[in-house]
Length: 262
Ligand SMILES: C[S@@+](CC[C@H](N)C(=O)[O-])C[C@H]1O[C@@H](n2cnc3c(N)ncnc32)[C@H](O)[C@@H]1O
Image 1: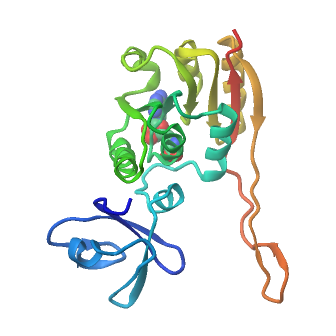
Image 2: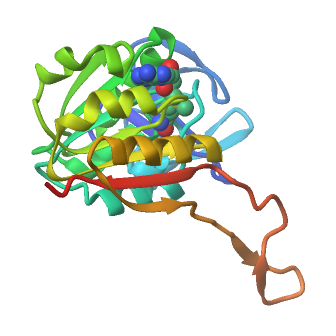
């Protein structure tokens, strides 16, 4: 937000830099060596600045900007799939959401934005080098957004830390699993799903979605939907008109949603 300790800059072609203002001179990859407070501190959203031979515009720290400018380590879930998770799980203010693994927090940022102040978001991650990146992305979002849920992070493999998760809430309205192996996680956390709550799995390959389907049914859940969402971007054609842009028409993952009816 304007007046906060952060400035989000955009290059003309859309590359985003999220900069924390600090005293003294700092080296920022892609920008250069600058005194962030003195150079950027007075910029208003929409103002432009020339730094070396590059021009930057200060932009609002909204979800698309923080997502584009996030630190990355593990593979992240894109807006395409995050949007379907939020919609099909019905995530909104006041909900309690359990998510594993945190990774770089690509999905977590979408969840946090949807929950607002009144939600509870519990993340789980066994690898500290991933959690470090993911938690830094969530810290930025918390400091820049007007609302942010109560967030707790639990270190470990989700199937081994159920008692620690329960310290934050003993039931959840939504659970999202982006893991290499869903079955032990589903077996461990399906009992935490409240009646009317839903669990979702992000499965890059078909064997994962099949195993997740069977594990959800064994856990007494009703599979509501499984499949993938295809995205095809369009652009202006050089000789006029619009058409799908050149490039890969790729696969991200299969998504599965299951419901606790009783
Ligand atoms: C692909 S990344 C998650 C990316 C994240 N959804 C995002 O959008 O940034 C998968 C993460 O799951 C973690 N993981 C693997 N097994 C796990 C388990 N049993 N419980 C919790 N996290 C696990 C990995 O360490 C890794 O960081």
